[in-house]
Amino acid sequence: MDADGIHGQLDTLILATLLRGEAHGYAIIGALRERSGERLDLPSGTVYPALRRLERAGHVTGSWTQAGGRRRRVYEITDEGRRALEKGRENWLTLRQVMTAVLDQS
Amino acid sequence: MSGDYLTAVAAPLRGPRRLREGMLAELADGFEEAVADNVAHGLSPELAAERASAEFGSPGVVAAAMQRELEAAQARRTAWTLVVALPAMTILWDLLGGRGDPGLAVTLFARLTDAASVAAFTTAALVLTGRLDRRAAPACGALGLLAVGVALACSAAIALIAEPSRVPSALPLLALASLIGTVWVSASALRSLRVAAVRAEAG
Image 1 (cartoon, each protein chain N blue to C red):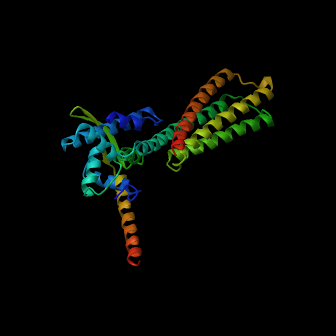
Image 2: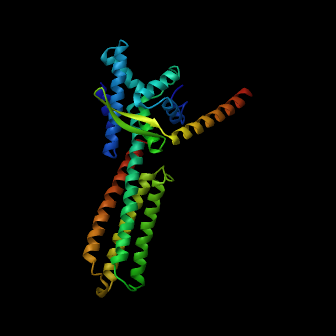
């Protein structure tokens, strides 16, 4: 699935990967790739500004850490982020039901 | 090769330095890791960097997404400047600007200044409370400049028509505070307009 196919869903997908615990940008990219079975063809560089957007919205918190000589920004989902994820999940399920209903009749 | 990609992403970016450098540092770290992963899978360093560039997306797409965040951050900065500086200047003039009826013309110019300040303050408050997101930077920039422009023009008009006996004794202090406020607001408003213009140019 290409970037256009998941337009508007990237934030929800990122939040879903963070449910397993805090992670830095590249680990999130890896988790998205792995959990999609390598089918998600996303320009992974856009994950970094998306994380800042989620941080601005209060859905994640980010903090710089130093590990193994590398300075990295690690993100953690907030309670507000969990609520946004739940809403994103509901929206997606509704969209899927609508698409299925229409396509099944064609 | 890695440097080429990161330079291409960084080149068009404008906005708050700390956020810009932070996002670029994160991108550079991830890109290095992607190259290292590709080398570990048997690619030459050149091919590994090429593959990483393809995975990360075109520099223009990544830069545009980053620029949206920089614009939002700059809009919030200008909004904070407006919600602090404009009421401070208004209160200062109300407290030290002299008492008594200054006459209809002076009152009208003073109210016009207040109206421009209220418009800019309201826009800034909408941005800070998340009610205005799209076009926040150009809105804050334009209304911030409008507020100081109207204040300067009205001050000049008042200075021309006010009776010398009504000139407040604290005028030097008021003039200095207004000058500082005007420079502060103008500089931030212009930065917002410049940052917003980058995205407009990029389409």
